[in-house]
Length: 207
Image: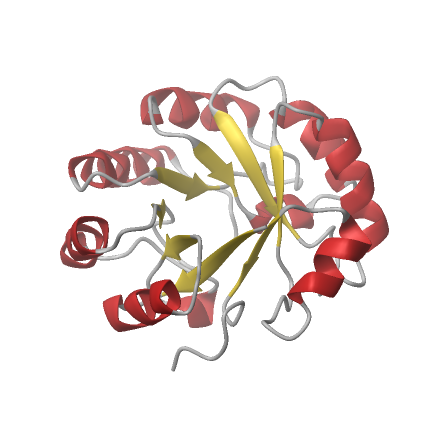
């Protein structure tokens, strides 16, 4: 089982590693569901940790509909993640009617090469996250999808998550989130069939 800990400070990242996290998702401002971390934090985490660091690429809080200037900001943040030797990047883009923004997702996934991309929980805004998986399978470079199956928690979304895993097949890993805790991670894995799980407290409280 891969346990990805979602953190916003180096101290949290180091503690997560110490407690057995397999990978880090590095963000700032988790109160707003995670924004791009500072260059300094990226550099420190990617240099000093011994586990892979995935860097959130999200220029602002709010929705996932991004303007052309925000897309340019995201490209610049991807450049900085590459310079820091990140293991991958995390982003999600939607259209105003809550569909996956295919052109810009394709553009950024290509721009991020050779880094693998995780398409984040923006997919849970879709009416049908399973259809979202079908779309993302057509975009080279998308290696993971972070989801709680369109529900508030992974346990509530377990049926949809199982469908998403089935559609994703061998091509994309479904990374399961949504109140995944150190106390329920085994149960969530068992109920969803997911081998990779993600959470703020997946290896305990890091505060």
